[in-house]
Length: 198
Length: 198
Image (cartoon, rainbow over all chains, first blue to last red; front, side, top):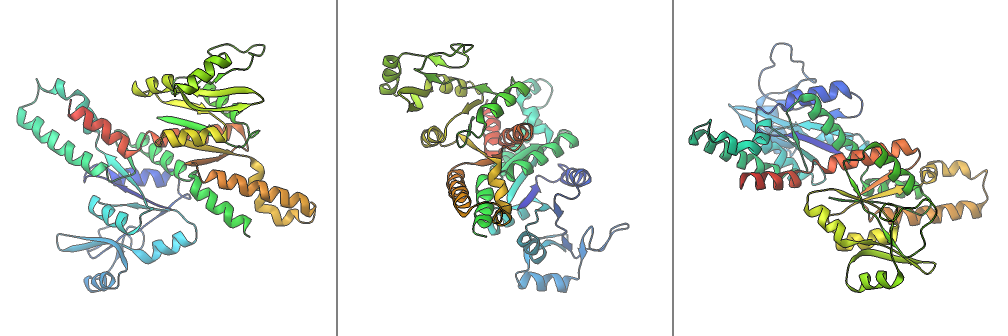
């Protein structure tokens, strides 16, 4: 299985991902991204990122070796396909942490990927938006509602949505999703059929 | 949401359901079946079953008030539709424990029902079927494989499959499924849209 954790920038995807892997290091394999930017202090090649040259990255794009990629501030970021394919063929579950655009690229190429959308907690507070009316300017409220609409629109492209109000709670919810996906009847039926057929 | 726990007869559906409700009495409402058979000692009308006359039951069938029903040994068993519809309209989650045939009737009428298949643990033991070859007769092995094939075929009509090897483990898996279904993005997006639109 291929799990994707995504969501608006600044929502805390990295924090949730790190806490998840700290809790459950052996259940999932973390998909390491490739990038053309310089390694920062403390960043390790092959652990934090695969650090590659611009030429190498563009070659990988042209050879169809990128599951998804994007360009930010003249640098490439992307997910090499080969490693993920190999892991999945061996029956391992892979976990990616990824921007929204990248997630949509993966969805298009891997229809059975499981997409989890991490939501900012302030979307929850819209429940009280009528109460906000007295305390915030109309402009602030309109901006909030506009952002909220965009986030909800994004959310509908995902399988699951998790509010990142507290990291621990969010991690537990991601674990619940992974646990339930492992109980999907079609997946289990397929593996039983393989056993029956030897 | 409407959750259905089903599976081959004798697999322990009732035990798992009772243990689930003992642990989590307030999260789910249990759908009580109607029957025309006599109440047994200790059985309470409106708690264990709704005990109704044959005439009343047939009238409910004819009026389309039964979500599903079956006849065993000249007695009717079935699920009244009205109560479930009311609970779901109020936003409550309903849980049913039901035979395989009934589950397929509900799936046809309520496409968004969540169907959980409870598996007997001996299906798991098929992993070792080659090891059985020495200890069991060919006839016994063939019977086991035939039953297993039927159960796997049933399973593919369900959303999730849970092995009932230990009641506690099975209950936890059912809770995981319920938890994950509550995190489905489409469901959450719908409720956010309602909030945004007041």
